[in-house]
Image (cartoon, rainbow, N blue to C red; front, side):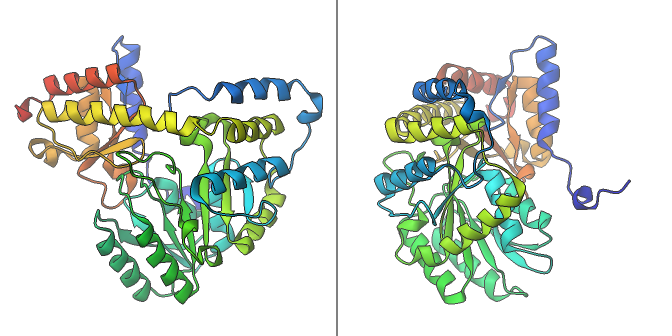
Length: 392
């Protein structure tokens, strides 16, 4: 039997490291997992309490609404006004999605069809590359650089030299996996460009609240005129440590929101209503939680980068996200990221993500996820120091 839509998918290289990790743990080894970006912080107490309360009400067990209940959308709009100074209409400019991946993937179905193209930075969070392909579109890759002026020039050049002209631009800052960050002026230039060329910007804002050293990640909707061309995905996964709850929002341009709502009305009945109720109360009554999470991740970043520096592996501390994007040390570079990460599991009992799994431009790097406490991170760097003997 042929499964044509998934036939061209490459092997998911992260499973190689995961398999090695599982094997080592079964053998009794203490593997420190800094690979999969799965937040370890507990969800807010108020979210759990409200979920339990709402789940005990049988009226909440019925179908919900695919757009999200009104109070949930109102809470998301209030959050945007409080956090970014952006005014949104919860009826026309906010829709609940079952996590950011679901919202992004279905949006690609709405925006793209076979023969269309889209601009996507590389390396990239895998769904940013594959969701357009699932929609039958072509991906035009934009190599991501730390210099935002150079990256904007690349974006503009790739648009001008692509045929057919791309219908959308995918962005995500702070960026996974590279941790690249941009300022509001960069967003302004992209919005002006998109308005001139009449294309849609899709900004995945997964790490909206995880900026370090005083850096505050900007929402693209802070730019005047952005609502004419842009939508943004805001997720409670990292900001509120609610990964398994699958609560996110698409906000922005009302025409794009309406189109996604129409598609979703055929596909789902929304998230379980007690989850929506709990998320509503959490956004309204625990606005301080994202700052608490950010402080924890910042301390973990410092522990990791300081520990790596002590063993001779120098990495620029990221300004945002819950990751560190590290070039493979020169003595090990020829191994490639999969072989290097495999060796690290076996020799250091530390699991990392191979850079090649994030597409073009990812080879030569590994990604650390800050999903263990500072003591475990310190242990991980000590293990790495003993294993990476060529750094001495």
